[in-house]
Image (cartoon, rainbow, N blue to C red):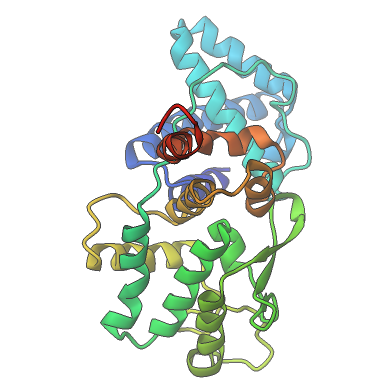
Length: 302
């Protein structure tokens, strides 16, 4: 059971871009949940597993927290951590039923994404060519494709050969719930992928039947953690004085698209958000663009 928690914490750190302190808080809360679940299973004579943890068990856990006189804010945080964890477990296909479904959820605030500027993106994308590392073309293709499409890093590393149409300039990916979507990409991103497939990937591939698009030096599919390490190195070399995670490029893609005039529904579709309310968080980041549009368009603002 601890292994699944570690996988979730890696997901929070690598894909969601959560800070070390936030991940540590999740670790503490979920470790407490794990201890409760293990004790409860042992009491019932069952083998502890998340697949056997039910809604009734979740309610019992919440009652246990209340009986231990935790503050309401602390309970809210612990319940929110559990809901996030079980949501991840369902999405990953590790459990079928979510034990936190229809369990009262605390109303906790949502932090706004922190994008980087267009000039910072440009500096980051220039690094592979500047450093001239052996796998520079692979790294350039990955960075360009991530910013061009706004994909999640899990979607990026899951791509297979043929998922990027370098002639038609689009990428096919499978998001949450295995929902397929086609995303148009700009021409330079297509060319970067094309060059990688032609010049760099053959040097990495160990097997002729390997389907993965992006490979590590062992000829295996690159992992989320592997990509994150690559990104961190290039961010440092670019001298970016902000924390950069794979999710940063997704945030930046959405913000820059909206600032450039894209409508919210189109950005929702590109990002693969099921609900537009998830996409609306980015509208708070485009106030400067709104102000410029207002001053340019309003007859009394000139």
